[in-house]
Length: 295
Image (tube, rainbow, N blue to C red; front, top):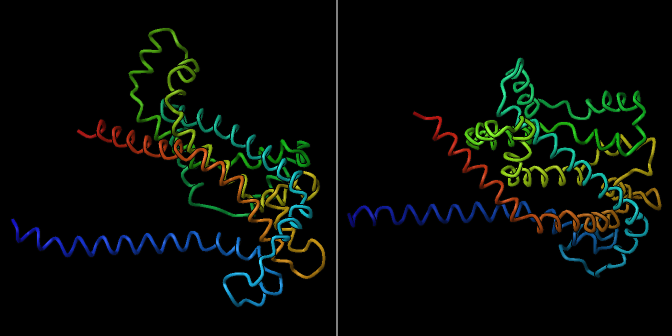
């Protein structure tokens, strides 16, 4: 017995060292772009483009003031908040309904539709799909409105629908049957029984959608070409690079990017507990569902 413990000791120690090194490498790769952006925003443009020291030679805090004024942060932040909140609410509602129906009801073409949803997670045509979306919104008269932009960003929620579906499958069907016996309709069962239990996974979906919408660039840029007043903070920040002269002003753009990080960081800090709870609850319910399915 003692021999086995001693033999496992060095192996366990080496495994811990490897795990710590791996985590440190991941932390460095994750935090380096953020640290570089913040430090780069405090340099002059000449110092930034020439390279050199990692830390600024002189701290240029006025870059933030220039970025705030040139990008009209108040206006574009308002657009970003309206777009992100509206898209998140619409996506949460549609994902909740779709996930519930997929998990609880059998209908013609269900397997085909699920197959299409799954394929959307692995097959991507990139920006090529933006043209038909823009053309459709133009045909219905929504290409120059905030509503059209919200609808364009609400699409493509296949992964979130499947997340909700997997979560709902972990909820005992006996609850649905009891509600039906008590006279609840399908919609009543969803609203009164299932929806309150879906709060953890819906919090995860909401955070995913809010983050993706807030950080979206290419879709928002294309959809707002004909109406620049609807541009979001992300688009405005990138345009700071050429805000004054033809020369690229990277220091101003990095300052704007540093400011743009703050709102999404605040949202994450406020929703961190719900996010972790949702992921944990989803994993537990998935294990429970697997356990019930196994003989």
